[in-house]
Amino acid sequence: MAKVEHTELISGSDRYRWFILTAAVTAQMTAAVSTQGIGVLGGFIQEDLQLSNTDIGVLAGILNVAPILGLLLAGEWLDRAGERLVIGIGALIMGLAMTSAGVVTSFIALVSCLFFVGVGYSTAQPGGTKAVFHWFSPSERGLAMGIRQAGLPLGGVVAAAIFPSVASKLGWQSAFLVGACVIISGGGVFCLVYRLPPANQEGGGKPSHNRQQLIDYARTLLTIPMFRLAAVSGVVMITIQTVSLMFLALYLRDQFSLPLVVGASHLLVMQLAGAVGRILLAAWSDHVREGRASIVLFTALGTVCGLAALGLLSIHGSSSFMFLVSAWLGFFSFGWYGPWVAWVSELSLNERLGATLGIAMAINQLAIVLTPILFGWLVDESSGYAVPGGLLFVTLMIYIIYAGVLLWRRGGSRTSW
Image (cartoon, rainbow, N blue to C red; front, top):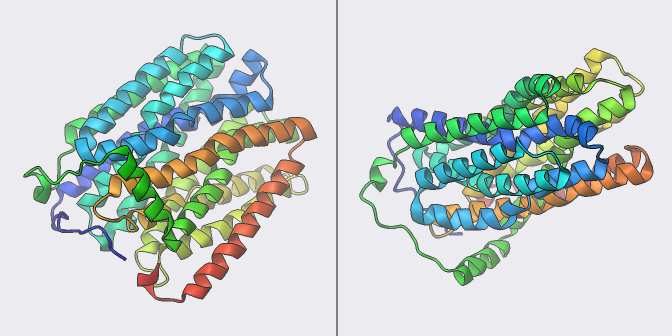
């Protein structure tokens, strides 16, 4: 199978690649304050606007509607315009939309603002990933991707550390205004620091593709068994991640009468563990003979154990056990993304890295949009978390069996992954 040519990669001795990585992490971390902050602020918004669990799911869903198409367009735009312009404009759009969310007082108006936050966020994931891909060789790429992808849960850490205090004292609208300042600052840092790798500075070579070519390329990717497995893996794992982010604090409130501020501390622990997981698991994937796909499957096994432990909280409901479960679930249900994005990047064909990332991430977005709405609705309809939680557990088990059988049949050659 053809793979992206790596002639554009710089020498491994060039120290500037670490400045690029730092800028990419900063841009991702600050952008993620918007998406991860909804999980932290959801309870405050719910109490103020008298919303149902389904409504909270809608807030998470609408934030991620625009990236379904936006990621595809952003991927193509990246291949044409470059990372600095795309990420800079995306950060500006997010900042303006977050500012608007900070002055609204109704559910419908907030939904509208979050849609445009999602428009801007479409640039953050593929843009930073492509920047890191071109600056690091394959032997370091898993580690670099893991560090870069740690920016997303670190954004959740920032949100969990700041937003509850601001929301409890000044209101959830003020938290959105703080988030706007953080996002614009992070995008500005990336624009100031980023430059092309030396081999790419001559310009030219940027592909120009129309929409039909993008559709044809997506169809080609979907004929590749490993890309199909990567897509299924992404959908299943992002479902667990999204539900954990949106409903963990509400679950702890409803089941154990814990204040939302305490629930936010569990989110902080979960996100910190997720950041560590993304780095360690991605670095591990650089050295595992079976390849990055096997690491993603391993994270699914860890997540199953975390979900089972979460269901046992009613039996062992001590505070220390609760935080241990939050950390465990975060390490695996957030940590999978580091090795996964490196895996997808290496499946790219014909120097279409931006488009490949956009397609894979757009598929994930379908799950991100639908699952919190469905999960919230099931919580409302069943008056509890047992039914939707059980469905998550069963879905994850089916995926583990499917992926395990497929990878076992393909054998142990690293190049076959």
